[in-house]
Length: 517
Image (cartoon, rainbow, N blue to C red; front, side, top):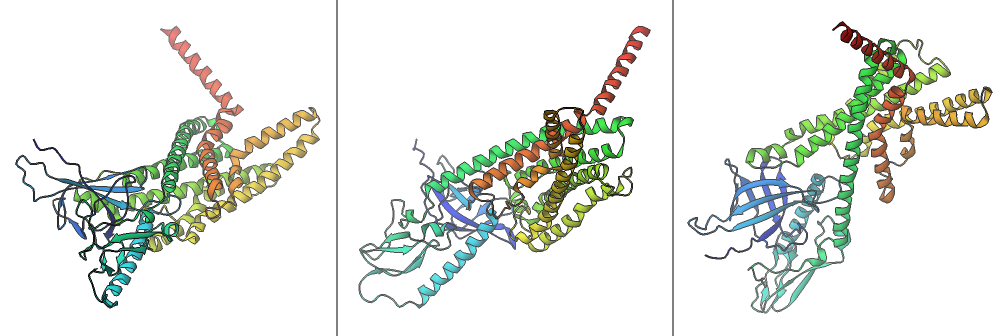
C-alpha cells in the first residue's frame, strides 16, 4: 500500500465581504500557527456553495469549523480536498488552510478592527505596487526576473543570478517592530524566480515575522486572562448563591420590612442582576465567537450583524446592571447620611425616590450610549470602545456616584468618630476598634473600593498597573456581593433574631405534630 504523505499547510489572511458574508477573500503569505512551515497556494477568492462546501479555483472544501489556539485570538481551519484525485483506493490529498484573523491582546483592539485596518493598508500597498509595475521602465539588456506582486510583497525587475531585498510590507500589524527588516527573493540564472522543493516561489521573510518573545508574552497574557475569568466566575457564583438566599430572607419576614431593608433588598437585587448579566455576556461572547462551524448557514450566521444582536443585548443589559448597582450603592450612602446627619429626602419612610435613583438613573445614560454604539460603532458585540467619548457616557455617572459616595463615607466616619469620642462608656482602644469596624462595614456597602483606581482610566493604566487594576477590580467586584450579603443579612442581629424565632416555631410545631401522633 502506498504510504500516506504529510499534509501541506497554507497560511492566508482572510477578509469577509460585507455584501456577501458567505464569501472570503484569501491572501497568502501571512504567518500564523506559530512553529509550522507553510506552502503558499495562489487562491484569490473562495465562495461557500449552497451545499456548504467551500469552492475555489483549485479545491473544494469538505468541512469548516472554528477553533481557538494559544497564539491566535480566533482561527478558522478549512479542510480542502483536491477533487482531481480519484476515490477508488487512492487517498485524496488533504490541505489544511489556516485562515488567520490577526492576533492581539483582547484589551487593546478587536480582531475585526485589526483585520479591517490591515486589509485597508494591504489594498493601498497593492495599488502602489500595481502603479510601479505599470509605470516603471523595464531593465535594459540581459536576462531578468519580471516584476510581480505575490500578494505579500512587491518585487521589481531583478537581474538573473542575483538576490533582491525589499523592506517588510508596511501593512503588517507589527510593522513598527520589523520596519528595519527585509524580505528576500532570488532570481535564477535562467531569468525565473527560484522555487523551493515544493515548487513554490522561494522567499525569505523571517525578518518580517513577529518575534518569539511577543508570541510568548501573548500566550502568558491569554493564560492570565483565563485565570482572571475563573477567579471572577467563582466570585460571582458564590455571590449569587448568598445574595439570593439573603434576598429571600429579607422578603420572607414581615418584621424585617422597613425602608432600610427595602434598600438593602434592592442593592442585593442589583448585585444579583450584575452577576447574572456578566456571566450571560461571557456566555454570549463564547457562543458567538467560539462555536463550531459545520455548514454554510453557521458561517452566514456568525459573520452577519444579526448574529451579534443577542450579544449586544447582553452587553447593554450588563452596562445597565453595573450602573444600577453603583447607584444602589449611592442610594445606601444617601440613606445612611439622611439618617445620621440630615434629611436628604423629605420622608425616609418612603423609598420611591430611592427606586427612581437606583433603577431609573441608569436608563438616562445607558440608552444614549446604546444609541451611539448602534449608529457609530455597530461592530461585533459592542465590547470594544474605538471612540472613548462614547465610553464616557457610561464611565462618567459611575465616577460621579463613586466620588459622592466617598465624600459621604468620609463625612459619616467623622460623625461616628465624634460620637465615639463623646461617649466615655469604654476606653480609648475600644472606640478605635469600633471605628475600624464601622469603616470596614461601610466600605463594601458604599462600594468605596472603586475609588482606589478611579483616576487610573483604561487609557492611562498600562503595563503592570493595568494587570493590578484588572485583578483587584475583578476580585473585589465579584466577591462584593458575598461580603454585602454576609454583613447586612447573615450577620445582622435582627435577621438572626427572626431566624432563631422561626426555627423555634418550626421546632415547636414539629413537637406538637410528633406528640399528637
